[in-house]
View (cartoon, rainbow, N blue to C red):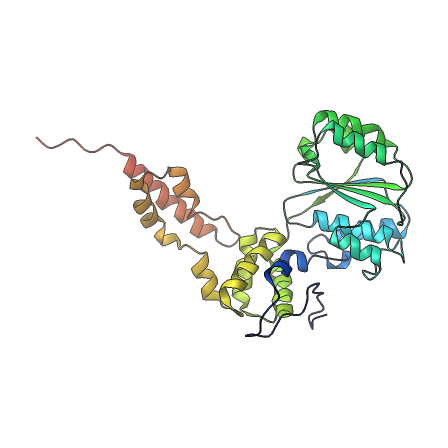
Amino acid sequence: MSQSGFVNQSEPVAAQGAPGPPLEQYTVVARRYRPQTFAELVGQEHIAQALANAISTQRVGHAYLFTGARGVGKTSTARILAKALNCVHGPSPTPCNQCDICQMISAGNDLDVLEIDGASKRGIDDIRQLRDNVGIRPSRARYKIYIIDEVHMLTKEAFNALLKTLEEPPEHVKFIFCTTEPTKIPVTILSRCQRFDFAGIDTVAISQRLRQIVEAEGVEADDAALELIARRAAGSMRDGQSLLEKLLAFGSGRLPWPMCTTCWERPATNAWRLCWDIWPRGTPPAHCRSWPLRWQKGWKSACCWSNFWVTSAIAWRQQPAAPPVA
């Protein structure tokens, strides 16, 4: 436990200059600092409170649908809910994270909590196998929980095969669906689930969580640098953590703000020069526009000026040459 109160699930970081752990033992930041309780969820306090109250009042539904953009905590919330229901000291809104069941669920290896990739196991045969196994009671936990990620990728026939089981599952079965595209899920499935929409995470909240991570890692970081990373994450905590890890490797123990601007920021005043240099080489205009334009909160003016200069340069380049003067 670090001084910031944030739980680091990895081994302690080796001192500078000392040999670190083998590469095959390294776990990325986004996995090591994954939320383990409802209280650690960032930006989804309304969902955490609703699920915690449902457990406390014994009003847990048999099917949940978590929707939202990438990296906002859908799968993490599904695992926390599974731990809260199956914890040895539960059902409880605050799983202990110490018992064998909680630890196995956190690692994704528990026999009674099945995480299914809807993109690869999307056919009717896969759902038929799931339906046949639903009747088997859990081996040691309280509930058998099916977490289906990217559930919108299931075929129409697979959804139809799941309808009856989803409407009246056995008492020991819970379903948790996660998706980034709820519009692709049939209405018949939506009507059988309790839906929770995960919002994009605020820039300030992402910056605060990144501050906790760098403190736990023993790295010095400027507040401006963390704020820039949070803006680049665009509401996705996982994207912010991935960008932070990239800079941790680049910075060697320190994260100054100028280093971040060198890695990412492209000044709006250079947009015209960038288009001038790239356009004669055959780069499509759409690609030219996308590079200098990064719509971020607080940078509206810069993006508008970038758009103006790039569009003007492309239009000027596309004009036919003037005829020679007689």
